[in-house]
Amino acid sequence: MRTPADILAQLARGPDTLRALVADVPPADLKRRPIPGKWSAHEHACHLALVEPLWVARLERILTEDVPTIVSYEPDEDEPADRLLAMDLGEAMDSYERERRIFLGRLAQLDPGAWERRAVNTAHARYSLFLMCRHAALHDMLHIYRVEESALGTFWPGEGAEI
Image (tube, rainbow, N blue to C red; front, side, top):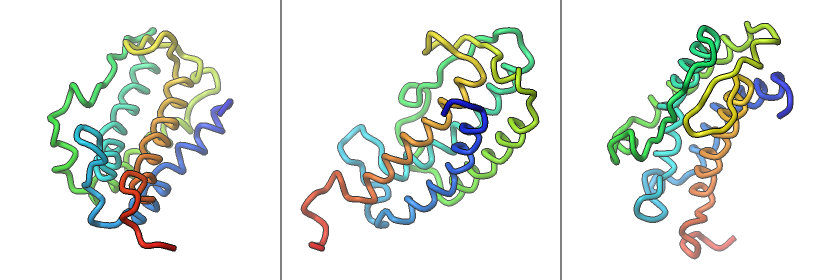
């Protein structure tokens, strides 16, 4: 992803890709954690819904403030341990899709120079609007890949039917 167009295309795919992979996870495995302390497919999907408004808020700060400082969001430290499991999965995926449309709509309005606006992020040495959006797209892929691992039964080999 080298251009804003590349990033926008990837960001646009996130919600549909997530829905497709969540649908492939056997219902009994949706909330099943691979090991204690590691998230289930349900938690990965709900996490994406929780962070989506953060991207929009960061976008607005980067556009309106001169080199704002963005405090890193650390879900394991910033949220109760069972918050994601308690969320309604369908509502979370709807929220993720709705918030993503808002994010994409706002990004589509930007002048090309806006993508280079800088910020400071407490977890990264370099940060700009472009890097934040690329990070958001890669963040989607990371969590969607974790859902795929549950869909494949990666964490529970030997439990599936022989094919």
